[in-house]
Image 1 (cartoon, rainbow, N blue to C red):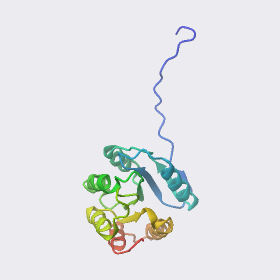
Image 2: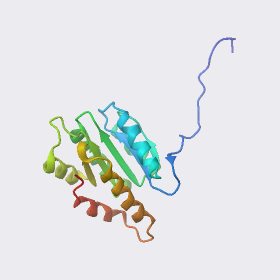
Image 3: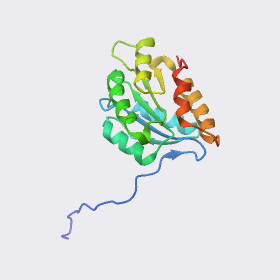
Image 4: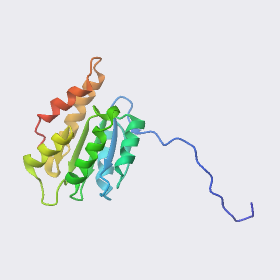
Length: 179
């Protein structure tokens, strides 16, 4: 190779592991495909790591197919979808359909939160529609972090139980109001 020239070299190393503690959940944090905001994802990652969970932050503008592929590869205990651009309801409904259509991910707990609509909090109707579409919990922008913290604590207990049944979580969380 000539002096001063450069060459692209394929890097076959595996992706870096999820960060955080060893005893908690493995959590995938992501946004919807149309959302380019990252501060919310960093905040969620740091909060979840502080709670002792291993976090894989996929970043902003994650295409649906990429999220599904990563979840199939990682097999997380929880997927947290965050949106602050106001398209969380529309994009989230499409995304959860893709996740639930995959048999390997059908029982994976998936939650969505943030600014889910452009008209502000949608109340019970929007939350109920997102739950009916397949989300396990919906956190409106004004819900705060305590509801997510409570859910991860309960999920950690369920995951550590020898008789844990992932499908039972969906039933439990569909009936809980996280506002």
